[in-house]
Length: 362
Image (tube, rainbow, N blue to C red; front, side, top):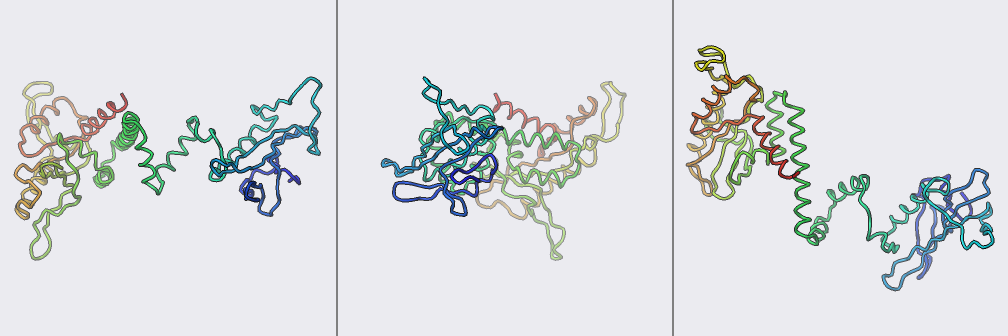
């Protein structure tokens, strides 16, 4: 480390340095051992006879009471004396576009000064910037985790309506994309608990089932049915409520297996009009399960204030439609014949989510 200049060609740990006030008008660059520096040594030639330096002084501005960082870049000899300028030349050019003059160390120095922006006047450097992959990736988590939410809201209010809508679209697109990725990676995950937990974390997914504004009001909801022995109670996976009418809906979650929609062939020949299939017992059992939740809930709770139960919805999410055309025909016969339960397959649900993503990305 030199006597007067912090040598960035050797030391990269700028945490040793601080900027402290010298008096009412000046600041000083010092390290943790109270050594005072005139600036930074940015580069040195292989022969050691040409040094690139940056002298720094900090003088207080009368307009904003911040200390302006005044930088002077010099080419010197090993004793830090200015190199002679050739006759007829007014200056020595010091480009920072390659490693010869300390391109990397130059930007380390700039970053160090920027960290002291509370006391240093950075002028237009702070007001105008270009968004790159790296600084955007670093900035977004900081904004997301900022404790002072009012500060974020205050600055968002300064944006135009179009800008706000664009930001909202970007956030929504990311949320939807992450959900679709979960589905793509877990299409063959037949663990009901996994999907229940997924829908618990992302409750808005199930809201897409409804044409009206429904919001989740409970999960593993107790519908009623316990006797004196405290057993026999009925639980529902999810309960949603229309935000405007108060009407509620029961949602039961089953596995996304594709072989739990259709059972065995009942009669007829493959590919002929007379072929029909029986319905899988997992599907009929799920239908009866969610209907029972509604029945017990109505019996136990009646119609409490704020909830409309006469038109209570029952929804069963189960299976995938990766079945043959003959099986799909029998499944649709059964599904469309139900009056009180709506059956939605997993691939249909996430196809709907994908359609929403297309609206945002367009």
